[in-house]
Image (cartoon, rainbow, N blue to C red; front, side, top):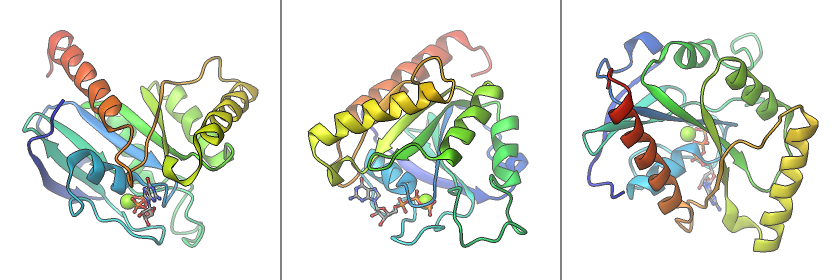
Length: 206
Ligand code: GTP
Ligand code: MG
């Protein structure tokens, strides 16, 4: 699939104020600094579309980007940012869980995981929450440029083992990406295209 247009529509901290248009949408979630906003820019060929930063905690709101006038990419704030006190923020901010629990247009979430790291409790916890809430999701391993090909394979094998150890019967579908090198882009866009076609065909709400 080719992305011809990508436009910023709205930012907000209230799931109820997200765009009313009933178009399929895909949300990017994961730890702060994992590369959610960078991946949106990589997919859309626009370095300035989503705001990125070397410091964690850059994205603070729900951001809707309309793609090809036909579907949405959604950039979300990260979780697990230690600097924000527990008083002001629960582990997963309420407006984010509200978004996941109420957003009918959400057809798939992408949970981003830094490929260099072992499975972290907070990610496993978030994926369990997605499973319990029956929200379809895939894993996207990010920053693949930071390690070699062999290490990528062994880290993924280790990740799978940790998922099984945490009672996951099977590894969710996953993608390996690098925003720096634009790798994984075709696979991810092909997947989105496939899901779009399926929901437009089978879900009369769209
Ligand atoms: P928050 O909005 O704070 O939750 O972070 P985020 O997940 O949106 O991360 P962001 O895209 O802002 O990227 C964080 C840092 O990681 C930036 O310095 C990016 O340049 C860097 N980064 C993101 N993706 C990649 C990648 O694929 N490779 C490398 N080497 N660096 C990356
Ligand atoms: Mg961000």
